[in-house]
Image (cartoon, rainbow, N blue to C red):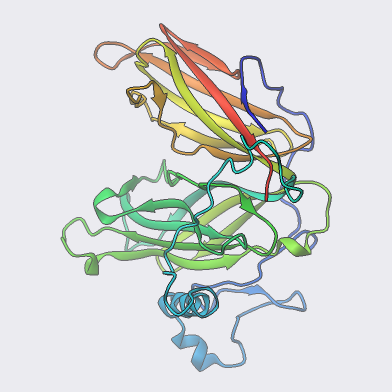
Length: 354
C-alpha cells in the first residue's frame, strides 16, 4: 500500500463504534500477572484471591523483584536460545513492511492489533514526593518475535520529571504495530532517581511488574478499550489500551513545507472506531524541533486503524514570538496545518500486517 498524502480532511469524529470499558469477564482478561504476589487477581472460577493462597509462606517471600526475575528466567528459557538473545532485545521488525513493495504476499492483510494510549502514575505513597524524576522502561512483547517493543525507555541521566498535575509518561513507541495473534505481555520497570545520590542503588522502585492481556478469550466483533491498574509498594500505575479488530498499520510523518517552524504544538491521531487520541507530539509550550530537511521529530509515529474506520489527525499549536511568547493559536483536524507563517504537512504510510 503506497503512502497517502493527506491534502484533504481525513474524517469526522464520532463515525463508527465509540469505545468504552467493557466487563473484563465478558470481554477479555489477564493471562499472567507479576509484581506484588499478594495482589488480587482473577481465578479460574471468577473469584478474586491471592495468586498463591495455598502457600502463604511462599507468597510472603515473593516480592516484585523475585516475580520479575522468575518472569525473566522463564522468557530466556523459552526464547533466549541459551543466552544468545538478551532479555532486553528490541524487536527487529520495522513498520511499513508492506507500504512500497511491488507485490503483496498472500499472507498480508488486516488483523487484530493493540493500541496503547497512555501510561500514567496515578498515586504515590508517602515515602515518595512530587515531583518525581523517573527512568526505566515500559515495553510490550507479541508473538511476531517475542522481543520488546518499547513504549518508553529512558536512562538515569535522561529522566522524565512527573508532577501531580502531569504524571503521564512521554511514550515514544511502539516502533511497529502490536499484533494480537497470541497473548501479548506488558513489562514495566520504572525507578525514581534519588536526587541527592549519584548511585542508582539509592533509587526507589516506582513500578516493577508484568502482565498479559488475554485477547484470545475476546470473541466480540467490535474494538474496545481496557484499563489496567497496577498497585505496588510505592505507586499505582494505570495503563490504557485498546483491542482493535481487523486493523492496519499507519506510520505518520510531519514536515515543515513553509516557514521556520517557530511554534509549539500538540499533534494527535484518533481512530474513529475507538474515539480516543494517541499523542504523537506534545512540546508543552516549547518550540517544535525541526531537522535540517524540514522534518518534525515526532515522539510517536506508529498507530493502528480499524479497516472500516477513519484516521483523524489533529493539532493544537501556538505561534511563538521572538521571546518565545505565543501570538496566534490554531486548533483543527486536517492534513495541512498553517500556523502563522509556517505550514505543517503530514503524511500517512499505510501497511497491511504480516
